[in-house]
Length: 205
Ligand SMILES: Nc1ncnc2c1ncn2[C@@H]1O[C@H](COP(=O)(O)OP(=O)(O)OP(=O)(O)O)[C@@H](O)[C@H]1O
Figure (spheres, rainbow, N blue to C red):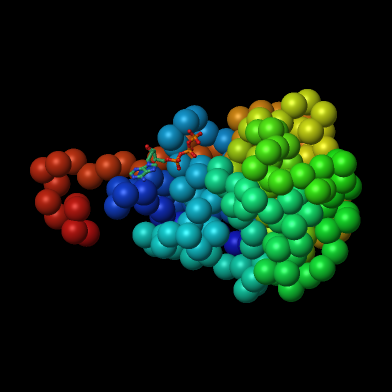
């Protein structure tokens, strides 16, 4: 279940954002995406998740191996925590939600309508969703936003357990997750140079 990215060029709103993105994410590995605000981390993750097409290059991953957790939680507000996880498990052809509830200490909130959760609790539910999917390659965009120190540690432990089982994770984050084993990819040097306004041929090259 290796994700291999070769000479990838990505765009947002038709404007190139990053070029020459190359990396391999092997089973058991984590890669931290670094780069300042607006440098293209979200765009890269969305492209890898298939939510937008690349401008060029190759993304090689086994079918149905990726799962993306972005800023929008994708939580159904009127369903309970357990119902949300059961819904997602079924979408991915699975049943068990107990391990996911336990990993993010959501069992005491299992019957609570998701719409009534705090921001951090909602984020824990959004991350628990990853566990019920059974997908091996996690694409995570700022997963610790709204999490307190304890929940951040729960998340780091969930990532470690996932890696130990042969999963992998690509994580855009500005904080130190304490994953000593993770490599880092700084996207700042890969910023695409916008064509000069008078570079007519360049625009159509
Ligand atoms: N819908 C959009 N239309 C046009 N440009 C966009 C759109 N969304 C984002 N951008 C631009 O694309 C560039 C890359 O944004 P992106 O969200 O990928 O950066 P990021 O590295 O994830 O930033 P952050 O650390 O702030 O989350 C930015 O310049 C941003 O302003």
